[in-house]
Image 1 (tube, rainbow, N blue to C red):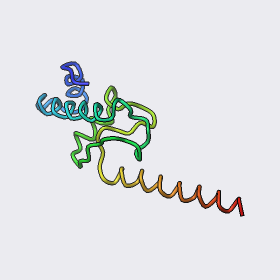
Image 2 (tube, rainbow, N blue to C red):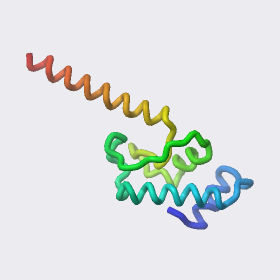
Image 3 (tube, rainbow, N blue to C red):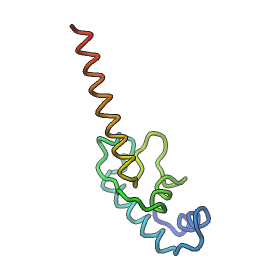
Length: 107
């Protein structure tokens, strides 16, 4: 994930005034998270092994940028507490509803 090419692309996309070292630190962090996940990014938020929570706009923007974000239905490497809470809340409520539907249909 870390490369001078990736850093250059991020600088061009977001902000050339931000030092390349900052993008490098973000990418190093994402590489560690990806390693902790074993490269498995599409297993759902409830089964994800690691995630970086932050309110830093640049870190979140990089996490969802092309070439960094793994793609459809994948859990990003970085997010904020609101996104994580929303995803977990949906999962919990969906599970409860499924159990209720199964229980109701068997009665």
